[in-house]
Length: 323
Image 1 (cartoon, rainbow, N blue to C red):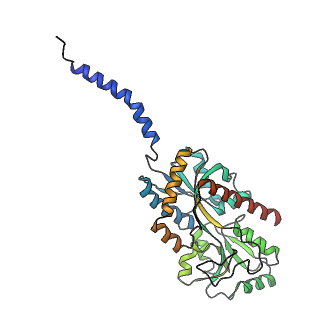
Image 2 (image 1 turned 90 degrees about the horizontal axis):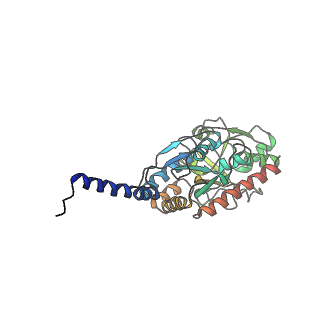
Image 3 (image 1 turned 45 degrees about the vertical axis):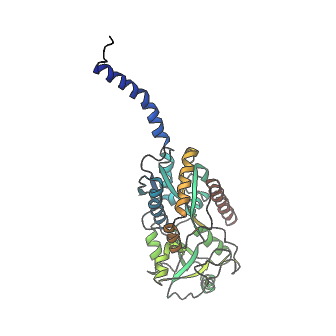
């Protein structure tokens, strides 16, 4: 007669089976992305446009990716501090950063050692032209009024900007080359920059409309010019720089989400798919409408990479010609 298997024998057989199965289960767990929280590194401080975009996108991506996406603000060096964190983290898709036009412009100006090719850009989430705004009771009723004052009083007119080497700085240098010299007053903290013209610390602010939307909606700021070829659909009475004879309409204020360039393609594709689905949601469309920042179309990662790279080359061209 055959002996019945002992309990010990059954336990050993089960343990062996589990041991053989564990590598397969581990591999499957590793293959499933995402399987844990994804950190969203916002490369500027709280309260700015990049922060608002990062937090709204985080909320929407949580619904799509089914994992938490905690946001951390890592400000400094025109966005370079936060993007350095993205580059030094494991290239596994679990660290995503905001990359915006200001930072790419700063790279072209020599601020920071990074370049667009160090990253894979998932999508362009926002895209809008910049504008010049003044307080509601400013003596400058039109952009021509401002230009006339700048021409008669070189350097006296103070404009709040996000820093040197940015598209803000380039635009002021361009206007200066045409005989309208203004003084660049950079502010590291977005909230201080937005409030500076209202508090009369500056005469005007160069900014994209979304960042100062609350001040516009409260009637505290007025738009004088939009640096674009076409009028902004939300500011139809505001003339464009092209209409006024200035050829500086190719410095858009875009925002993107990016990961380390070494991130596996399948992970990039999953993240990009999720971002583009988020861009189609009613919540996102309402958000970008309220902030005047809806991109004209959706970008694949390859298209976004080309778009950002071309922007950097445009900035380099301006810097070379404005020396």
